[in-house]
Image (tube, rainbow, N blue to C red):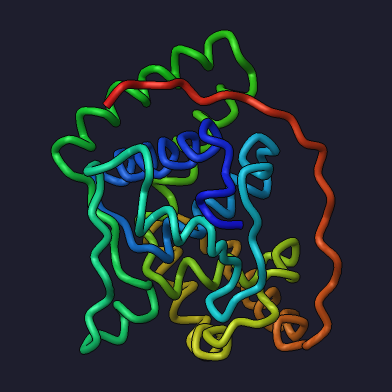
Length: 229
């Protein structure tokens, strides 16, 4: 699906969500992190799931539609800047560059975010979006790329979307070091270390060429609040 095939309100909703995530991420985020935050929302919130599709990719779960909208927004214009990866930086290549909010974007973010929170007082689906964003954005944005991918890869509910990853072996080779960093950051506890090491050991399916079917989810719809730019 390409942008020209999107319903106008759906496209605006995606762009407002990108803006909200950027605002909650203190104004700058890697494309890899933005993709994985959307994947979390997409998995657990059917109102987001109906907007686009995620597929297995060499960096794990990925949406080409989301990538296109990140690079070329249609309605929420001049609110963020896509910074392509530097050719000389291996990390930049892995994370796919960065997205940075603009001064105009900061002002619009405040209005859209407040509008969504107000809507959440009466609309359970909107409240669920607010709660998910407040939970996942601060968590994911404090993670390095390999820490983020280790959490994605060792969650068996993500297996369909991780089986084509070209980064999994690199991540798994330093799994214990990554887990130690996650403990220091308070993402997991020391008591969880052995369980995570077992999850790494039991993740052979990630290298399999067999792709299990995706789980089906019931779809509901909400309209994110509109705001004039």
